[in-house]
Length: 233
Image (cartoon, rainbow, N blue to C red; front, top):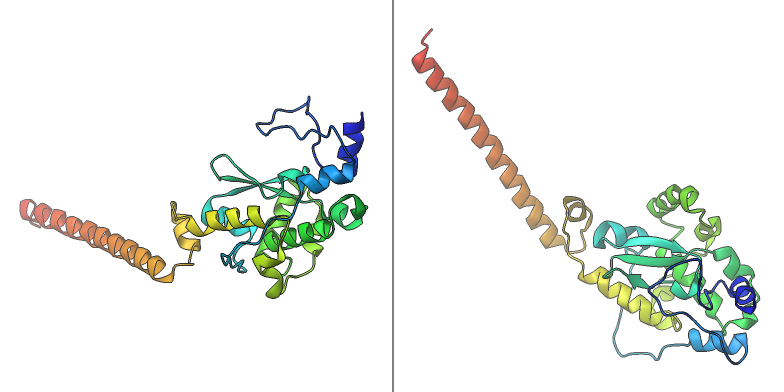
């Protein structure tokens, strides 16, 4: 059908998907050209007055480690950077090869390049830990190896003002990342964004461990003294 052809051309789940269940409203292309449909779907967002910093720690690996947001790789471009399940699951489009080679004329101007920038933002090839994390997931999910070849973003490239099509979703994702509080010991260990809070927590843990340790030692010593009192050598 024409919807199948459009899906193959754009990697967007257009029309009703009879083979899968989705809680999302179907993307129906009923009138106009495919280019016009995509322009309506991926339209630039108006700039806001707020300032959002996309620092280097803001990446897919840290979203899971620090904020408990699980990355789910998707082949549906329209789901890219969307959050589901009470902001605990993030969809990331990983087909960098498609974005580099597709006929970009059917997409809005600069859209494919900006999408590649968001992939480079979340999966920075310059970060050894992210490269290792990505390669571990690659076989199980059949991920595009070109993701780790996306160009390195400079400090200016990471400004939210440079993102027009994905700005709103990036701002929401960044807010989830910034507002996340550690809830597990591993998150407390890795999340060092709030230095004083991190040190205070681990000092308290150390004091608790030492208190328990010395309490156990004193209990053992007391038990030995009682034993010796009743069983003198």
